[in-house]
Image 1 (cartoon, rainbow, N blue to C red):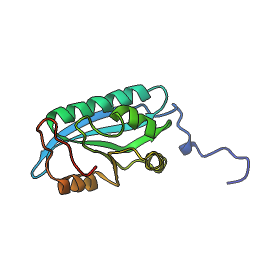
Image 2: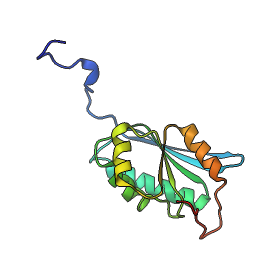
Image 3: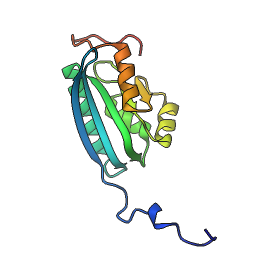
Length: 153
């Protein structure tokens, strides 16, 4: 490409950032128990960050009440604001209310770096959903009794 030429059209999104879409999927896995995955897709920015954190907080509360493992899938997300701040607000400090960890799947490099630098307690990063599920299986089923917490956070 010669100097001074515009970027190729493939790099420019004509309509601006991709809209934020959120979807929850819940399943039961033998030996693991309930797993609830909040999958986000699109761009999280200043306009919809509140919606994202509310959805995450709601997801974590519901998984805690159900005794499920909580997973946040960021595979198809671009975060255009502070990822650490979003997770901190949405999780109340990085952990579910039950005290269990939040597994975060495949954050993009800029999100991964931000989360790592923030050092949020209880946030565990995984390269893919299968890796997150294997790590959860190694920990065992969630204890559903009120007031119990994982010890190795």
